[in-house]
Amino acid sequence: MHQYKPVEAASLFIDEFFPQCQGAILAGSVVRGEATDTSDLDIVIFDNKICASYRESLIQFGWPIEVFVHNLTSYQSYFDSDVERARPSLPRMVAEGIILKDEGIIESIKLEAIKLLDKGPAEWSIETINFKRYFLTDTLDDFIGCTNRAEELFIANHLAELASEFVLRTNRQWIGSSKWIVRALKQYDLKFANRFIDAFDGFYRTGEKENVIKIVEEILAPFGGTLFEGFSLGKK
Image (cartoon, rainbow, N blue to C red):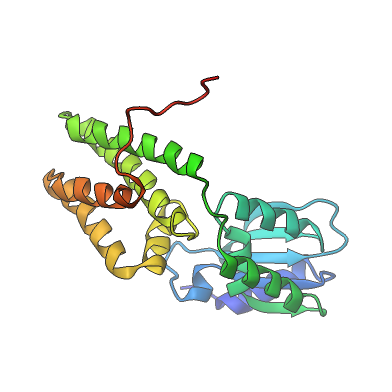
């Protein structure tokens, strides 16, 4: 049991370590109502005296804390980088976070973050789609042909990552890693996400590959299906 509730601990942390900051936001699982026993506090700090942005992990007031410190312009390059890789970690934290301190700057930064999230990532080019199709096909073929259980497990992991990325990006959706893969899929299409999860869960439990193969082929179908013959990379 924590001595302080999340907002209380975060506020104490800011008062202690960043009393001169212009703004602070509490984000993460505690804000979304998804906290577990191992959850930490994600705190975004905006301080115009900071020369360069940084991230730090520490334990204070009975909580593990991840603090992301920015000045009033450095956060924008992180926004841009997150959009480029289609994983909007900082924009999401800023958009969904609870304001702990604000000297008149947070509203405009939150608006920037919300606009980025609503816009979604850039559309993949035909070249990128074909590149991703080829490597998704290659991994699917490995999965179908593999008879070594140990190797199958790790091929399946890779296949799930590639397939989730493909379906999300071809539908102009944000992607994620680890637990954020599931969250991104559910945000995109809950019914599809459950089918996707069930297919891989079934393979891990029983070794049955059919449903995994079917759903990956379904993902590829609107873009011409699997791709091997004729694919070229780097040829001049």
